[in-house]
Image (cartoon, rainbow, N blue to C red; front, side):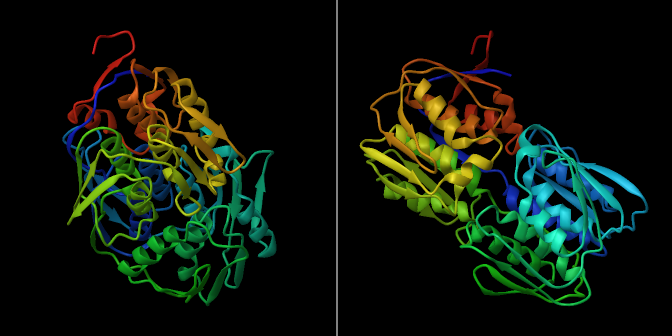
Amino acid sequence: MNIVVTPKKLAGTITVPPSKSISHRELICAALADGKSIIHNISPSEDIRATCRVLREFGARIECAEPAADGDALSVEVTGGLKRIVGARTVDCGESGSTLRFLIPVSLLTGGEITFTGRGRLAERPLKPYLRLFEEHRISCRKGAASLPLTVQGPLTVGTYELAGNVSSQFFTGLLLALPLVHGDSLLRSTTEMESASYVGITLDVLRRHGVEAECERVGTYRIRGGQHYMPGEYRVEGDYSQAAFWFAAGAVGSNLKIQGLSQDSRQGDKAIIPLIRTLGGQIEVSGAAVTALPGRMGGGTIDVADCPDLVPPLAVLAACSRGVTQIARAGRARLKECDRLHAMATELNRLGAMVEEKEDALIIEGQKRLQGGRVSAWKDHRVAMALAVAAQCCDEPVIIEDAGCVCKSYPRFWRDFQSLGGIIAKEGRKA
């Protein structure tokens, strides 16, 4: 689906969807508990559906009512309990890296031979930290030339697990979810500087809510007591700062935009969007669960995104529409997402008339007073699509975004919310 966005400043009030990062973790913990849990405020995005699909294969019963409108958040009832799998089984992770990396260690608890498959760029995303660990711990594992399909079979055993912390924190989360169920204590330790440590902090918080403890001795080192049990209960997922970042950017380059549904006590690393916008000179006002982004005279600067690589797309748009030169630094891991986001954002913003220079692990962006508009590609990446929609506010001509439907991966109601803020869109070939 190609979308034509007519340049217009967005304004108004929006409630952000629930955190996708927390939703994955809550669903998995509920599925590992003996008993029934209810999780409120879950977005039926493609990634979350992938996690539910695999958890059902592992024995969980997951039920939810259809939302009132497509993409609306819903409540999910999970009856947990891993089942013993005899023989081989294939599970489909869609395009969700979280589903894949979180559930590989969990699959080792089922006893079955589990083959993980996926679509899109998921087969290219790195799994080497797991592969090396599995060899060290004598866990059966085989794959082809790409990362997927990957076939593994347990048992998962206790011990010391050492892996690099500068590839993805998702490997740490996967082991933190599974190792508490193994009889015996384990140590999980990063062999490098730990990046995106805030995501592991989210994992530890969700574990505690479900009655499971893992001790963080220091960032990158975690002691896990074995033989624990996940507790069922009733939980609510907070709003998503990763998705809110696009509305913060929209307000900063557009008109006053109030974002609701966020927790000011959140452990989400992408909460860093607020101080980062302020670093560029943007105006952000915080009042309880509402945050308002206002247009301001933004200048350049250097922004370090080592702990929040998902913020690269909205920050690149902000920089392109600001004054001065901005460097988005330590951004190399953005190349390992649904697409190479450094290359994608440099390519597509330049097509719109921006001045973006791509470095190995950085973007150097010289801000422009206005962009031109034109035809761009979303690279089948939800965050690239949303960023380009925000950039259309700063263009003189309409922006045609190819593959704009990919926002359903994380934010199914994005285009509906975009219109509710005054955005003018139409499918290509139709009038707005």
